[in-house]
Length: 132
Image (tube, rainbow, N blue to C red):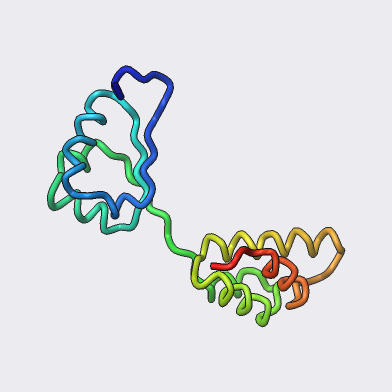
């Protein structure tokens, strides 16, 4: 059924959570020419190199490095330290959400012609977040 699809591809997020029994089936799907994108932690690559090097050899690897708060603070000096800390605390370490909120804050500051993002502007975006 999967092999009969055309103009489709499969995306698997959090590939490290896959049951180990599924990898041989995914190999068959890849071998059938269906494009598959795996997203996951580096331990997926480690697992595949140890247990399924034949699958790993078929994949192209893109390594995304984590966003570090200290690097962000030093790069974007237009956001007050207090605002950055409050955003970080609110997103509970989710660096993708952290960067998204900081970008939204910076865009809004530009619209308002503010020179920097202060805690009050950050709180506007933080208060709109659904509870986690």
